[in-house]
Amino acid sequence: MRYRVTFAKTAAMRYTSHLDLHRTWERTVRRARLPLAYSQGFNPHPKLNLASALPLGFTGEQELIDIWLEQDVPTGEVQAALEKAAPPGIQIHRVERLDESTPTLQKVLTASEFVITFLTPQPDLDERVAALLQAGSLPREKRGKAYDLRPLVYELRRIEDDEEGRPRLLTRLAAREGATGRPEEVIAALGAAPEDTRVHRTQILLEGEAVK
Image 1 (spheres, rainbow, N blue to C red):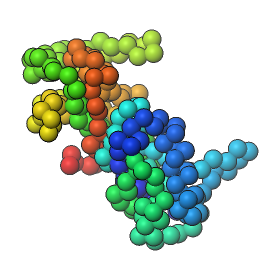
Image 2 (cartoon, rainbow, N blue to C red):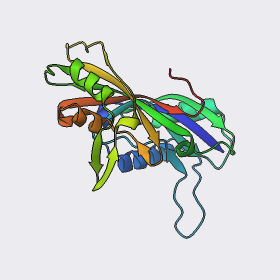
Image 3 (cartoon, rainbow, N blue to C red):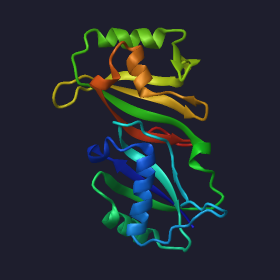
Image 4 (cartoon, rainbow, N blue to C red):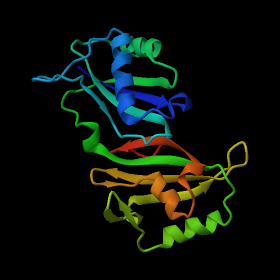
């Protein structure tokens, strides 16, 4: 039986890696005493599927994970058990039951939306944003492989400063297999230092979903 959980990864887990987050979820499901399903074969592993990795230091508001259980458990009971078992830094928003024929998250993932908060002053930020959007291409390199960042940036705009008066941007980036835009690359392309920012993913967009 397959369940999709919408959850938040908050500041308490900001420096938890993707692998450690996966392990945290495995422990949480066990602590909740839910009948977690395992794969078949010589080396069985828990059937958990996170939608998209968050880099170390990032937080997320509407993260997604699919969990397979060996038995049919009412969604209300699954949610209550997870809420009770979740560690600090994980907040459960919603649990829904999925049909087994539903495509995996990676097959229907299209984009991610992020809010970037700059921790240092950013003179001429509006001009730098405009220049990035007007650029025909943005050559970047990752792991020794060159690629063009520009087609991966669907949206980039200023939003209201945070409560401390620090400038913020909202960006929506491609998140398809082999074509993923990364906020840290956008920050670098703007001439800023990624380590001088806070990045929060506000939503993950799947095929057929409108922007919330």
